[in-house]
Image (cartoon, rainbow, N blue to C red; front, side):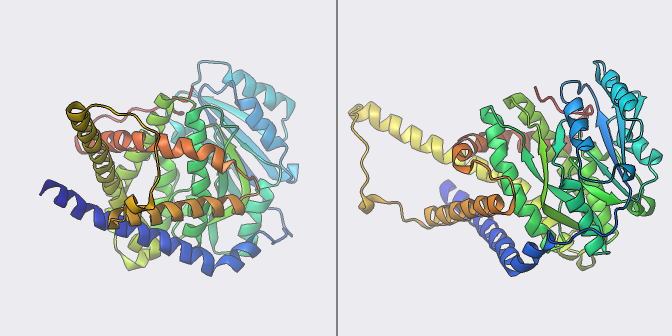
Length: 420
């Protein structure tokens, strides 16, 4: 009886997952020609751009981040970089001041007491007088053509109010970083498909670029449960502002190298998503908010809890099989033999068939994401780490996020996650 209930609850999740993936695939292939032509627009006018670089104890990566910005293939008289040190206790401010002295035409450095990333970005926003405004985390790096590619979107479509980039993990080394490399590659496809539906879910911190009027109309960044990038995306959709994605605008970010750092980052993201979604619950299933309100936001919210359930279902199935094996071994003993494959014994249940379909679609998503981006990733080298390790993290950060949210536990976070 218990297993029947578990299976019955799993089928809606599997149906929604396949439906969701097929819809995104359909959206992508229907707009394939338009997607291909999106990156062909050549700039005829260069608007002024301010890039904020909020930092907290980023002495190891700040210089490389600023070097990547100074190397942008964009008129230097149109580029303004504002570094905001948010109360660092290392040499971050010293490095920022050195760059300010060496490149006074382009770089300005400010120091403030620690108040969180949103306060650092808002300080830069208040100092900015540019047409466009963006943010680059101090552990992220852009390629020379990235800004030109993004700005071309604003010129080709006047309705676009923000553009998100194509983000990859920079030089993944540890198992945890290689796991994230696959996850970010999947994100390349998802953001592009969401963009075609006008339903992008988040304008990520690494180099999302906005028209300055966005902030004049809807206000500056908010603390937003320590996920200010998701909250401002919700506000933009509520104000019916169009957000696009550029799949050729490459940005590299340093992913957490340890399991602890990865867990804390994903816990913050999961809790921030859940709390902000609850704050904007009035957008759920409202036609005036388009595909975002009718589809992607409610779907993401339901997947949060179905993800928890699917994790429980998976662990239950594994432990049940393990317990059955132990029972059998204790009865008849262990008789090791070489594994064999006989198609006659192949599992042909509905659940296994659906799982194979989902896995096939997932691999296709990774392949498409890899072809969209100019940086071809090592999918097959990194995929085993994602496949084997990621499912073990999901129930813990989703479960902890749900527990902390519904029991109103204090949400403490500084500018950057624990990454090292």
